[in-house]
Image (cartoon, rainbow, N blue to C red):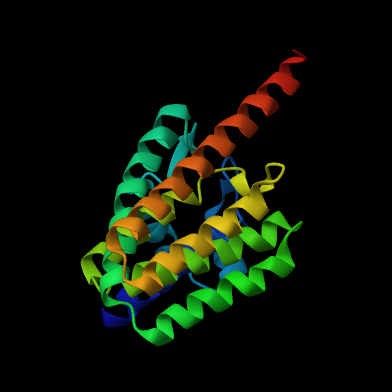
Length: 219
């Protein structure tokens, strides 16, 4: 029984990580036999993992097939509202509780990301690393757990706001402002800076999606 539970957990984490890394994108079909072969896991834990992911709305039904779910306009708006509030709280708590080592690591992330400007895919990965470090610096395990759920749903977005023209440079400036506020212990400023960062990221995503829709329709 313990081995079965371990297999289920491993299969779930493997599929979840593949979605998170973009190996499987929204709309991609997940086939039980193919997943079992790819991950070297038997079909039973794969089937149970797929059922769990469907229950969590990370997968959706397309006829008899399971596909990676996608977020519609309203779902994305709702997700950004929750993300803004929770991440703002994380920054506020980080300003109170972050250690000197954690602040130095955040600064290091910002500096290293300057070398990734022009590579939205790479920045998207390191952007998540930066935000998770802010979450951890809050030193609130329950908040971190909730933010992990939010970011799990973020993986269902087909594009990154960092691909918008000029967004990469602006995002790093905003990250630096967040770190500065945290390092000063200014909880209110840290919360404001991070919420503003999320708001501008959402605006950039909306603009990019609107432009893509216009191009698709020939308008």
